Length: 87
Image (cartoon, rainbow, N blue to C red; front, side, top):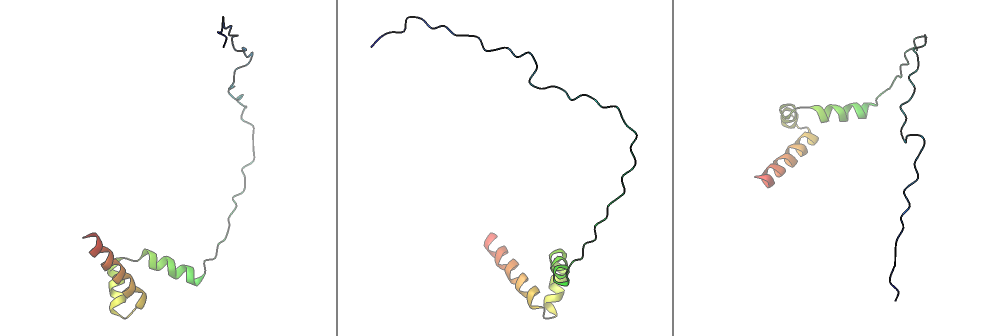
């Protein structure tokens, strides 16, 4: 094995320009106002129903379950089972 007698380090190269340059500010130009673009979206009946179900309160769910709504009854059963597990 041989020992290293000396180490010479070279300094890193110096850049003439900075790494980040602030973008040049542009002068405000007179521009015409852009027309507003409106998109029309139609939501299907089933999607509307799903949104309504997702947004209804517990009181509404209980009322619907009492009237025989199977989906509301299943939701109440799921919530009761979850509450029992967490208790």
